[in-house]
Length: 412
Image 1 (tube, one colour):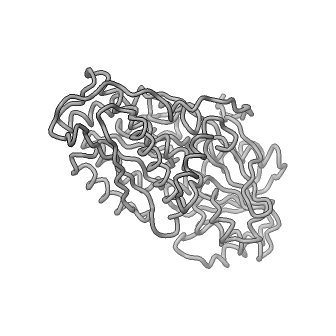
Image 2 (cartoon, rainbow, N blue to C red; image 1 turned 90 degrees about the horizontal axis):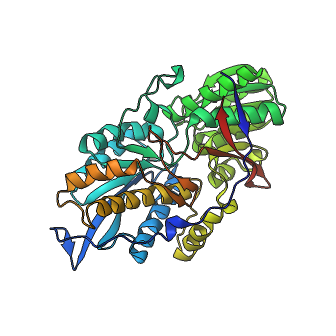
Image 3 (tube, rainbow, N blue to C red; image 1 turned 135 degrees about the vertical axis):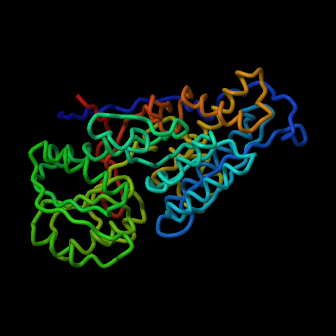
């Protein structure tokens, strides 16, 4: 089936996620301290290592959401606390962190992770415990739609898993249409890092590009732990593509771009949201110019709903920027807070005394959560995917990612 993209002019939405009114007070239970019940929201992200810039932006944005909820008394009688844990972008660490969260009877839900392969390692742990998990950055379609999603057979694997970012099922094709139809580039060399995110993203791009009539002049894989990509760079130069599409993250994508251009690549390197970082430009330097990255949602600076977030983030004095997923991390955290609020409202202002019951009710309530968030209207479909299907493309110009296209991808 062919696809087409429609350019949607972003409309202003009210920043309701920052100003919703509080619900009724909660009744007495063993978690009360000084008249307040403290609930913990776990946060899992790479807070160290090569992807720490993205992870710290996620952590800071979730922290801001928790602080905002407490300041506004979003859920009367409840104080929220954020517990961040570092997964260093490793699935085994993510799974260990998930186990720590579910073992803590003060943790009501978790935000994260960044990486899709880490998300796969955590889903079953949370689902077995009946605890909600909301990722601001996972984009692999199989996390919500099952392993057979490509054939049209979609089955949700875990009812406790949600995400505020859209998926590679549309991110890859959106970039393919832009490169073929608007950039008029017809030959591509496709490379991936063999990880869940990169492999899936490259596959969806490749299929759409070929469906449009484009030619794939070569494919290859790289080990993201390496930094010397000379062999692959030379293959790219010999194939003479108009551009390279890379499915992977910026720690490997940037040196690959740099080395490919030094070897003779004349066109840009294009990739997904994991290339949309200032760190990509720092690593590839002048050879990042002209490179393109897709990302979920519209640029935050274009959204009225994000103005208060960006102002408050700056005022909070965080040392690192919120990066590509900051707005989505804020909204992921806020969605858990809103689910808690919905549970309290349903129970006459009280939360169940048993944390297992609270967790289960929060999972159920999450399905119906909807609000005007930092990234736009936040809500979830029957798979737990965001209902916001907007995407953007950014090109490196004068050392910065500048938005060049924002729209909505629609399947027909």
